[in-house]
Amino acid sequence: MFEALELGQTLPKAEFKQRESHIRADLLQLQQELKEANIATLIIVAGVEGAGKGDVVNRLNKWLDSRGIETHAFWDETDEELQRPADWRFWRRLPSRGQIAIMFGGWYWEPIYQFAHHQIDESELDEAARRVKEIERMLQQDGLLVIKLWFHLSYKTHKKYIKKRSDNEHDIPYADGKESTLERYQNFLASAERMIRFTDTGDNPWDLIEANDKWFRDMSVSKILSRQIERRLTEHRNMQRRSILHDQEIKVDAHPVTVLDKLDLSVTLSREEYDEQLSFYKEKLHQLSWDAYKAHRSTVIMLEGWDAAGKGGAIRRLTSAIDARLFRVISVAAPTDEELAHHYLWRFWRQIPRDGYMTFYDRSWYGRVLVERVEKYARNDEWMRAYQEINDFEEQLTGHGTLVLKFWLHISPEEQLNRFKEREQIEWKKHKITEDDWRNRDKWDDYKQAVNTMVMHTSTGNAAWHLVPANNKFHARIHVIKTVCEHLEQALSE
Image 1 (tube, one colour):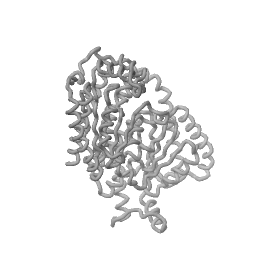
Image 2 (cartoon, rainbow, N blue to C red):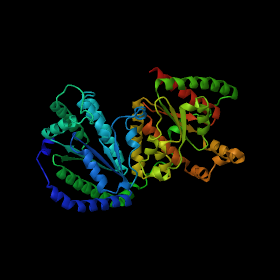
Image 3 (tube, rainbow, N blue to C red):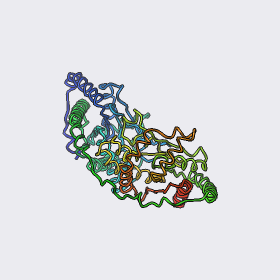
Image 4 (tube, rainbow, N blue to C red):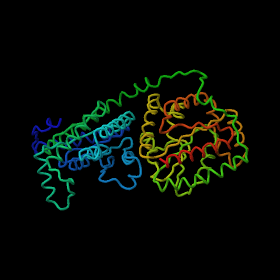
């Protein structure tokens, strides 16, 4: 692979300087068009040590409008980053629509480095490549332009750089261990070649650049950026036609049988039984929450359900048992302008709890396949691919060791009507009822079908759905807190 990048290509400095003003003008124009089209751009800069990655990024910051570009380097993982899934630090720095972000190495550097230093094996590197392909595919489908640049040096040039660098006492040593410079170089290239080969796709290709001559290198970068941006802008101009095709009506049975129809809504619990069990499980949850904190096990608990199904009440009973320093409650409403400027999962990635802490979601990322699907806030292709995106997201959480618990609180239409009327009569509950709540009742069957499909596609072994009969509030609350205790206890024992 890399032998094709050792051709000795050069560009005279005078020619580069002569063409630079035109290059800069063209790139500034393309940057403005990206902004007007609301297209976010991610530039990943990677390659051999000494290939001038920092110089390239400095030149891009000079050529482009600095008000629309941010640069991120991932030298070391902070304690805050180590206490969350690996991709958390990358999601936090993704550009908003119309902006450009440059990442040194991005999600590629760690697996390439680890494989080169024999810290992971081939299967682990291949799994890392699979995850990278998935995240890039997901972001690209959401509209993000991903430009991946790999800068290569011949061994001879690389060795000169290492010698010069080792003579500078202010530089960080290139690598630890007893391997020779040649061995380190060959191991690194072998690792990089495998990763590049597995992640070089039609939608998100790698551009490999010979970097021995800095003027040729930087001119190559300008050509690649222009080509990639122009391609993406052309795709954007055709997007409206594709959207119309994607949004053709998806027909379903008028009254299909769903998983919710199988729940027994007649189950009840007396006040005496409720008080006794609630006291028991609250005491148990209190101790388990501290055990999880000491064991550095984080927990994500989300409650979805019909309007007035009792999500808030269940969360209050859970949190009343836990020290307030150990949890956060996130009430998910319509996304803000900042959140709309990113992939829909971005706002949830930002709120993932640190190891040992708990986060409760009153509604969650499942809005993508529920309200956004039914109310047509998302195109058909967007919510249909969201099932896999959500499964991958939750797999990353559970893979990190986070306990993920998902509850759907189910009530009958008649019970919901009674609760709506009750809210209208009680002064301190009036704010809970809105016109949208009444309007959503007309789409009960559509929402029920959406829930059925959601459970079918996203109830997994690591993050199963718990469907809770909730006509009786006492039964529903005990069901939830008991389930949390059981799963938390099991997770801690493992």
